[in-house]
Amino acid sequence: MRTVRGLWGSSHPGPTLVVTALALALGIAIGLEAWRLALLTMAVFAGQLSIGISNDALDAARDRAVGRTDKPLARGDVSLPAAWVAASVCLTLALVLSAPLGWRMLAAHALTLGSAWAYNAGLKSTALSIAPFLVSFGVFPSLATLSAPEPAFAAGWAWIAGAALGGAVHLTNVLPDLDDDERTGVRGLPHRLGARASAVIAALGVIAGAVAVLLGSAGGALVAVPSIAWAFFAGVALVAVVTVVRAMVRPPSRALFRLVMLAALLLAAQLVASGGALAA
Ligand SMILES: CC(C)=CCC/C(C)=C/CC/C(C)=C/COP(=O)(O)OP(=O)(O)O
Image (cartoon, rainbow, N blue to C red):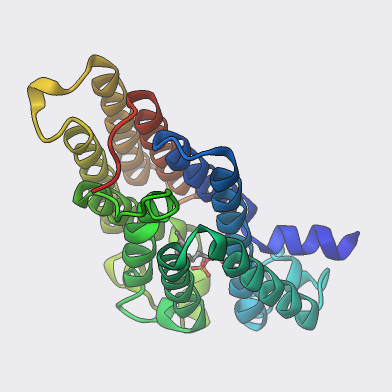
């Protein structure tokens, strides 16, 4: 039981659940039938577990060195071999569950997973640390549209929205750990930019994502934007403003990352509410 709890804690449960909910929301928005929706959601969930657990497995020694008591592997609640078995099983499950949805969906999911694992394996310590987030989240909306009986890539605006939000996720996720990371030699893009610049760019990313969804789901015509979409846009813009203000007046905390996740969920809800045409 301790191992299962520890593995769940290592999976980055918050982001895992949010990304899974986003996949479910996108699948609902495009009207996927029940079995496709279930497979898409379970495949994304398994993939997220594999990304989160492998991330903590690769970071275990560093996390132990800086006394990260929030990390089950660093605390010794889970052994490293158990984490690697769990991450490998989840990765395999993610691919096996994707396969019945078609080879295009399988290939796209493999790409998002490969890019995330590349982050874990070392890209996180380079100036290109943001790249896997742009790639994985950029491709992410297409996981839903490629799961449809007539597979298609997502529309260009959805790629832009996904990548912009993915960038914001990265720029805010590492903020509370900047000092610990520097001590263990992890110097990704946010470390090089500094906390405030990262938070401001993340907020701009959130706004860019909101504009892409607002205009994209209305076919590019401002006059065609329904009032419900404007309401969601205002909500997301408010989240972006709060993110910047918080970053200016308080030391960087998990709150900024949670605000970005909230913005992503609001945008997904907007897509479901407006029944926006997501496919290209
Ligand atoms: C759609 C999809 C597949 C997206 C995934 C994209 C991606 C690059 C995910 C990595 C997620 C992750 C475990 C970040 C934490 O890393 P960290 O080690 O920087 O921070 P930590 O202290 O929170 O572990």
